[in-house]
Length: 245
Image 1 (cartoon, rainbow, N blue to C red):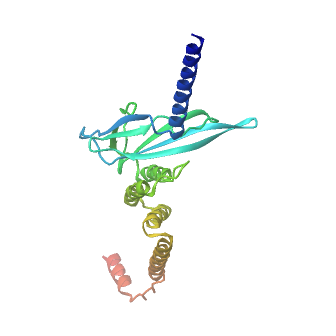
Image 2: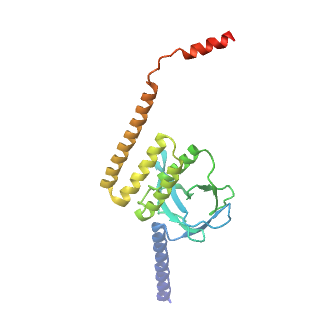
Image 3: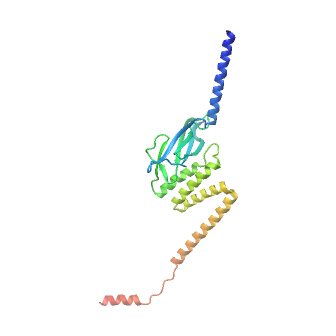
């Protein structure tokens, strides 16, 4: 009887240890437990396919008597033909971080999340605000493409950057905004063609911009320095004739 009880205890301990190891493995991978969501167009009521869903996880780490917020993981996915997406529930396992948060950003060219969105069911409406405000928002999404933690695969980052580039290019009006658009183009070419080609294309683009700006300045100078034609006296004679009448 004692041997039987001892064997049962050993089996129970082994089972508990196996389950604990399994959960540690799941939490370490971070991507075993998923949450489901949907994205629909508010105007049409139809699901939106190909929408990017970027998820970031952040938390606070204690340093001496202070705490510092850190982003420790990023996940990127897209919606399917039914507007559905799946994201991780927990993110990568980080035992030393406190107050962990999951932030979700739904990114579609020309759209923004409507207030009627609930939970992981997003309703998208055409982006509102001035061009400058829309550009600022799109630029924030661009910076998310870099992620934190482990790098996001290029195969996912590239289409994301192309979508952001199209959005920014349609909104850019000032020189600073155009420079940001050019920097996104460099990132795209760097991933597709390599750094050497991207750098060469950037130099050509900068030269074209310089020549264009120089030509505009020269035209302005020519207009401002146009010679003043001498008066032939005709206008003075016409004014004098009017006064006599």
